[in-house]
Image (cartoon, rainbow, N blue to C red):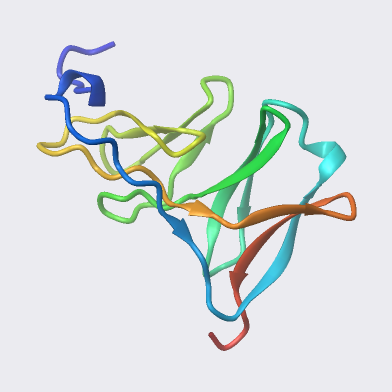
Length: 133
């Protein structure tokens, strides 16, 4: 690891960031992946235009986070072997659960917002803004 990277653990203790969840008002459920194709520890990227993100299965639960960096809004890239989301615009990376792993910014960016996700009828679905929303 390079010496110029700052991890969130290296900064003075502060209150943990509040987890944010994006909840569209007139949302619709969109299929991301068949539940059987998302094994424990698996991560799948999705892009529905207005909303892009990553779904993961951890501890038997499905979760989803936004694919948009909270610093400049750049689209994150999945590094599946490292289980991290990397920002192509600067040296910031997030865990697949949205937590900031590394950065070299003056202030730690917020964690990634979570998305509303469910498993229904054998399909993992994410709630996204409806048409015309």
